Amino acid sequence: MPSERTALAEREGFPLVVELALPAWVNQVIGNGGDRFDTVEERMGLVVRLARANVEHGTGGPFAAAIFDREGGLVSAGVNQVMASNIPVAHAEIIAIAIAGSRLGSFDLGAQGASALVTSTEPCAMCLGAVPWSGVTGLVCGARDEDARAIGFEEGAKPPDWELGLTLRGIEVTRDVLREEAAAVLRLYVERGGVIYNAGQARPL
Ligand SMILES: [Zn+2]
Image (tube, rainbow, N blue to C red; front, side):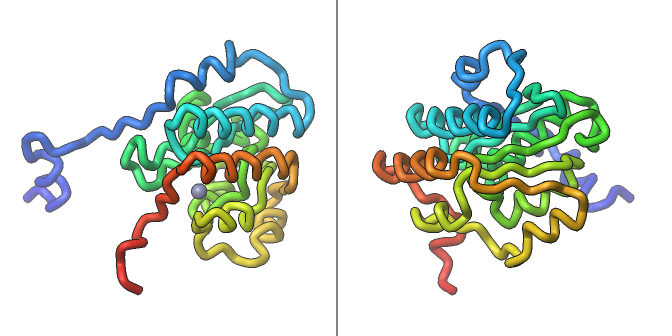
């Protein structure tokens, strides 16, 4: 007897694949991807440029992330694609982690040389949970989560001591890197009439 899950999967036309692609302009921002980013400010600078471009191109929310190896080489990048993809979990960090794993051929990014996840805004509850599972040994944040909440985005139920929780797992957390530049992208999104797309808003509490 096939399981219910198998039966569903075998039904004609039942989807077995999901596509999650970044906008083509990302390659224009990144170039050939071979640059070295020696400082955390340089790495965050690239991530903030990606977040700003996502707003300017109208291709998603005002968030970007990237993963760098220990030498400052770019491993992967992500920009928010929740609305464009209709994939509720398509946050920038999740996409960057997914592409890095695929590119490195490993589910443990740290073991393959990736060292830091750099994100334009402090991770939401979901992305925070993904950080240790990714294997990276560093998290670098730009804007604070209160900057995101200030324009209406939810960050979810994060433990108040989330930074300590990562540190205890051996993940170095660096906050407020180019915070003002990253927060300015959040404000730009609002000025341009960007949709604050938290799911579940229509549901009564
Ligand atoms: Zn997130």
